[in-house]
Image (cartoon, rainbow, N blue to C red):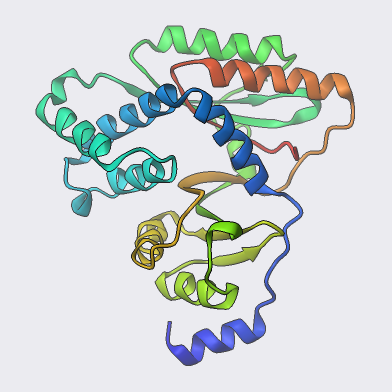
Length: 258
């Protein structure tokens, strides 16, 4: 983007104040992860291994691995741990036998849930996921039943307290690198990219030494569902907790407005 175009874009663009505090959700998740750091590193280690097996150990030539590394760094995984994981996977690719599986379904009041897992036993994982939905009064649906309600996007969240840069300057860096959108919330900045542009934007921010609270290619709901019934909230939270406790589950996306 040229300087003229970028300035014109800024002049026309109104920085969005989002009603959904993604950063507060990320902080909550990180607090849980800090209490079980070993588990999140195990999850990331599996993602690294699968990415290496699919595309090789060089992140410059393996976009999927590059994205997983960005996610790992945002979760404070040490660089030497990341490098060891890559070398281990590259040296023993035959031992990487995880399959990627996706489940879609519904929680209380029609909330949409997508579950992504890496597993060496699809029957076990399917049973556990189905059990989590059932115990929360939900149901597993067919492939595609809710994914159309989400957009696959690169998403980077930056804690305002950890960022000394002015919002306009940060937005310029992100837009010049290929970001689609920049939003300012009370406590954070959110940068949205197309999946293919995520790495370039992440690298541009990394070169400016900007700390990122979260950085990953994710599924963003097009609309959110508000739950007012306490039982619905309790049931959905039960499903999410059970999925979070499952070692096979890598990530869970939903459209509940927490």
